[in-house]
Amino acid sequence: MTGHGLKSVTFFNTGRFPYGHIDLDGNTLLTGTNGAGKTTTNQSILFFYGNSRRERLGISKSDGKLSWAKYMYPNTNSYVFYRYTGLHGDILLMTYPYSVGTAWRFIEIDQDRIEINLAAIILENNIPRVPQEVVNAFIVAGFRPTTQIIDRQIYRRILYGDIDYRKEKELAQFRQYALMEAPKDFQYIPEMQSSI
Image (cartoon, rainbow, N blue to C red; front, side):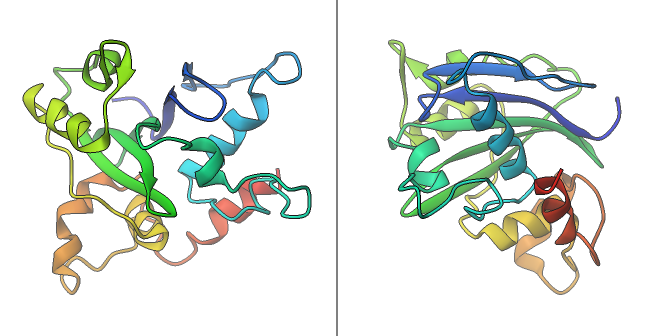
C-alpha cells in the first residue's frame, strides 16, 4: 500500500464533464485552456477534503453562480468518485445529489481487486444509472457500499477519524474509511487547503 491520500477523481454526468478521470497519485499539475475544467477539478478536490462552503470553493453568491451541489450534480444520475488510500486500505468514495445537497457512500476496495471498471458499474446503454441502481451494480460486482451519509459534518468526521466508536455505535461501521486520525484539529485542514 502506498501513502495515504487522494489518488484519483472520476466524473460522470456532472456540470462540467460528461465523463472525466484524473489520476492524482503524486504531484499533479492541472493545465488547459479557459473552460477546460481546471477550477472545477480543484474545487472537487477541496470538496473531497470536506471543504463544501461556497466561498471556500471560490463560488461567490454575488456573481449568480450555482451552488456546488447544483452545479456539480445537475441530474439525479450525476456522480463524482474519489479513490483514496486511508488508514486501513484503498477506498472508493461515491458522491451524488441528494435533496438539496450531497450524499456520500464509501466502498472498500480489496487489495486483490485494484482495478474497478466504473463505467461498467455506472453506465447502462451509455447513460449513468440512478444512485440505487449503481449501489445494486456495486453489490452484484462483489463490493459492499456503506449506508448513505447525507450530513457533511458526519462525512468530515468519518474522513478525519473524529468519531468515538465506543459511544457512537451507529457510526462504528465507518471506522475503516478514515483518511487519517486528526480528531482535534481536522476542521482546519479544509480551511488551510482553500487558502493555498
